Image (cartoon, rainbow, N blue to C red):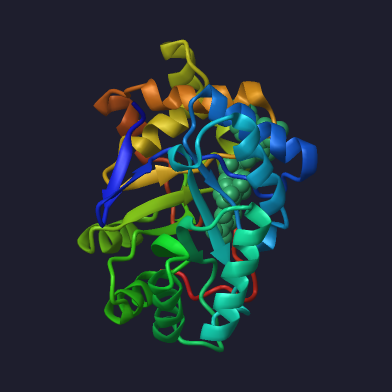
Length: 274
Ligand SMILES: NC(=O)c1ccc[n+]([C@@H]2O[C@H](COP(=O)([O-])OP(=O)(O)OC[C@H]3O[C@@H](n4cnc5c(N)ncnc54)[C@H](OP(=O)(O)O)[C@@H]3O)[C@@H](O)[C@H]2O)c1
């Protein structure tokens, strides 16, 4: 049984399949083979323009709908209530499902406050379109605003997190509110593969840098991760990280790689980071 993060009475598998930039047959194959290999959680977004392929991949896996945890996200120009409702309905139709397991605000907006956006999100849940709601790319001040405005527990904040980025402030804030931190770019888009500390630990353990990084992430309280790969073999490699336990000494060596300047994703429209 895969490790889960439990929130609001729902269990979220801690390891999911990222799907950014995966399309059509490549996406269908990655999702279906990943689910057959043991994943039970898939991450997509309206912005990725692959929700149809993600839905096809889930169906091709042969697993019943209720055994797969599906997350999607609403883009930051759809945060007003009517826009969000329409965006959620369109995403569900593309996925071919009647309810998300988790629906996230993809990025905070400069035009709609975090509080107003979360109030729209609560309405999406009240209508039964999603089991859980959450946020993504929210720094601490906006996490606080979102939590205060929400009528239900927020499940996660999905943010960039990997061995080269210090996210202690966000981790402290989400843990305080009983939320998870879903790590995106968990492999630092491949940078972990060349790091001498991580490759050294992998060689010592007879494992791989990707699996060691997944183990480092999932070994932290309230942390989930959604590595992406187009390759069924590399998806299995990442899944192996779930069964790997690192020594305190190896964990500390990876902890020491983190820095506040290790961020890879910071678009113009993004928030002021902590
Ligand atoms: N909320 C947000 O704003 C946001 C932003 C970015 C990402 N995300 C989500 O987070 C997911 C993960 O982030 P990401 O895709 O940006 O980066 P990532 O998972 O850190 O890295 C993906 C890269 O690593 C390679 N890779 C994966 N597994 C590997 C392995 N075992 N060995 C060697 N190389 C491997 C992949 O290449 P191959 O495909 O060739 O294996 C790909 O180039 C996304 O797919 C998306 O679902 C969310």
